[in-house]
Image (cartoon, rainbow, N blue to C red; front, side):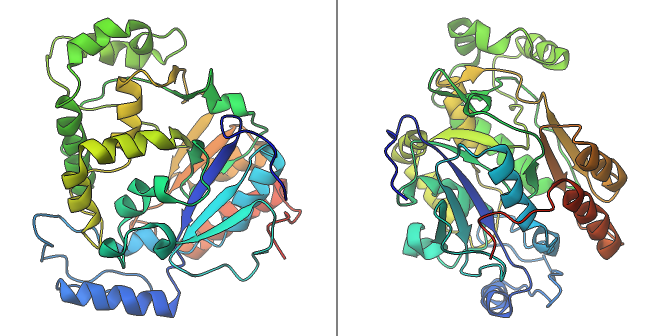
Length: 358
């Protein structure tokens, strides 16, 4: 399908996906895991995590690869609620859902080897997959990154993601906490802040763009965080929502140019470690002033499984939010029961196949 719009007008979506039950993927993952002293079972469960890959705390958690069998609802939601999207870049190790229409005009299937430098392959590291998005062939300058646990539930407009030509986002401080339930992320967020502190002075940045920190409409909690944080001269961390993230492709190239060594180190790890992640790019955009301040948490519901399963199903059925994030964990016990509950709710509002399905 011909695209006559300019790159400045086009907005693409990017969504990575993993089929954790693919035997060939499991075989390769096990081979790499065994090299660093780990193994993973056929159900995605992880083995010993006692060994480290260099200085990295490798995250080889099987919970990251549960198969929820609801990706088709992501595509149905996009087609129904964001028909304006230019192209969907579907990033995958190589597996394709059996129901997918690979000839869909707006679909671009992207294999890891199509855009990730060979020196970083094979990779099972979400940081590597994300930090190289700017290398995807044909990706528009403006794009929105979705995890496969983030779904649209109501109509959206381009202006929900970009306004005045810039990504909509919220600039707020939030201290990094020592979270024993997720130590890898605590390390990552602090490392992001350390890199950013090389290029941005906290108090000077607040003076330079006060309206970005104290924007009417921000949640009151983050007004409070920003005020309290002024007492501390150094960055302690940033607030980033786990939802659709709007990016300018050129920001990735800029950060790679300046911090090639740390990004190369991060991407060299086969599994996610305590390096940096895509929030570094996102927070760089904000500190640079290359964004439009807005309360992007408005209309976004976050549900943690297993405890939030009933709430998530209710939000979906009644379309109480514009976007929902359904975050799973290794604490999910009745997996099949929860999966059926969530997917039944999606089916109730998105029963019709999209053009991305056979």
